[in-house]
Length: 333
Image (cartoon, rainbow, N blue to C red; front, side):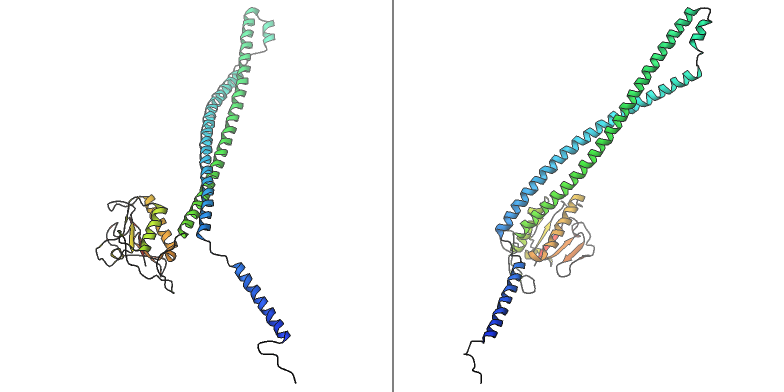
C-alpha cells in the first residue's frame, strides 16, 4: 500500500511538471511584457520634441537654401532664354541675307573671267571688274564665316537654355520635396505637444466624461480651457475666440463648455485661407475628440458629434455667423 506524501508537498514528477509549467508561464508572460511598449514619459516626449525641432530647423534651413537655388536657376534660365532670343534674331537675319546672296549669284552668273579678259577690247576695264568680283567673293566668304559663327552661337544658346530649364525644374521638384518633409515633421512636433497634455476631469467606464463646472475669470470649464489653449497655440486665431455668454439659448456657451474660433469680423464671409484654417481646426478637434473630451463641432452649416461620427448638414439659420461659416464651434463634455 502506497504511503501518501506529506501534506502540501507533491510527488517529484508532479513538482517537476508544476515547475516546468510555472517557468513556461513566466517565459510567456515575459514575452508578452517584452512585446508591450511602455508608455513614454513626459521627459521622453520632451526629448523627442527637442530632436524633432532640431530636425525641423535643419529642414527649414535646407528649404531656404533650395529657394535661393531656385531663384538663381530662374535668373540663369531667364538669361539663357534672352540670349537665345537674340541669337535666333541674328540667325534668322543672316539666313535671309545668305539666301538672298545665293539667289542673286545664281540668277546673274558671269562667264569665265579669263576667257573674257583674252578677247576684251579694253582689258583694264575688265581687270577692275575682276577686282570687284574678287571683293564680292571675299565679302561672301566673310559672310559665310559669320553665318557659321551665328549658327554655332544659336545652337549653344539653345543648349544652354534647355540645360537651365532642366536645372530649374529639378530645383523646383527638390524644393517641394523638402517643403513637404518639413511640413510633415512640424506636424509631428505639434502632435507630440498635444500629447503632453491630459484632459482634466473624470472619465466614466464607458469613455464619456463627467461634466465640469465653469471656473475662473473666463467662466469656462478646465476641459474647455485646455482645448482653447491648444488651438490658440497650434493655429493662432487672429479674429478672436468667444466662449462664455450668459444668454440661455439652450447651447453650451452659458455652461462654459463651448468656444467659437472666429475666422473673420462683423459677420463677413472668411477668405479662402481662413476657411482652410477653419477646416484644419475642425479636423484637429475630431482627431483629438475622445482624448480631450470634445463632444461636438459645428462648422459651415454641418455638425459632427463624437457619438455618431461623420458630418451631417444642419438647417439654414439665415446668416454667415448663424450657419457657422465664419467660425468653428467646439463643445466639450
